[in-house]
Image (tube, rainbow, N blue to C red; front, side):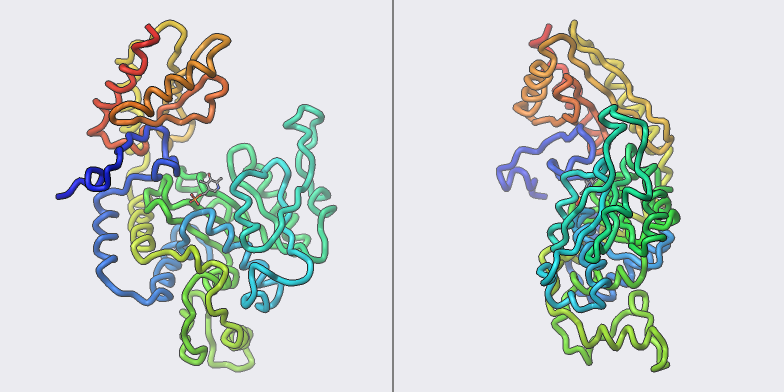
Length: 417
Ligand SMILES: *Cc1c(COP(=O)(O)O)cnc(C)c1O
């Protein structure tokens, strides 16, 4: 078999920084790789494929429906496009992301804002900050309240959005309650909130209208895969803006998981499908990031394995490998190791490497650069680099690479002795 890195003249990295997108995200299991290779040689109807995805995602999340996207970021864009389409009665399907008139706004707590929320702008919406950051700045004790959301509502407001990261998740119920009272759907970015697997259901159960997850992180799917789960009508509007619709409207047979049809001309379902048939977009705002058949199949197989596998045992074996490396690594003066043991049993331990002293950021930077320049190159998580902290996470390291990883770390530490 050809080694693809040799064939392309590429350095193969050992990514010991976790499911970093920059280094290709999750490492697929053999089962996922086989399923993707099989799918690439077959033809499927993309709507039938997404209908199968919807059934699996609904079972995994408790949501009414779902689609596979090209990542959580794409799911956020499609979620925004869906709520705009809903607010416009379907009219925007034909022109998103240019909606004409006032730009639709999405309210988001100031303390949840992050680089990924630009995905909303891709759908032609604008994020409006809500509330203050009194706790973050130490200015006061009050957090997000209903009145903060209410104050920013305008006629063109289409949704409330939030992040589900650890520091933000407590606000989700406040926002869901605000959405209920104000008649706005709530979109949750839960991209990296797995494991625990319970989080697949948590935000749907809390009342979110749409929830987004990455497929290329803990689920172990293809790097460019993700999940959009939620209300059937909104997921359907998202699907309409991603899937190819170069088909005569009379020939379009919408899958019932997205468009429950009815033979009863007086029913809401019948009217909805008739309206949509008259407004089918050709190539929607999501066309540029359509999920491939390989990605859809790969994600569904990975999701099934994630849910049916023994996640606690997997975390335990990752933790044991981390401890084995920590136990053998002799640290020079001025560098300390600390095992980061997570509270959740589905999460694996990680290892923090802390550089001391006034030059700690520089020392950590030089160390991680030596690793990156090594053969093979090695990556660690650099979120704490400015405080002199690097973190080792084995989620994307093949156990066969542990010996090499240890040797690379020891070699990069040598100049510090
Ligand atoms: C990783 C991440 C994303 C983007 O996910 P992709 O699947 O890579 O598109 C979005 N939001 C947050 C909070 C993330 O951590």
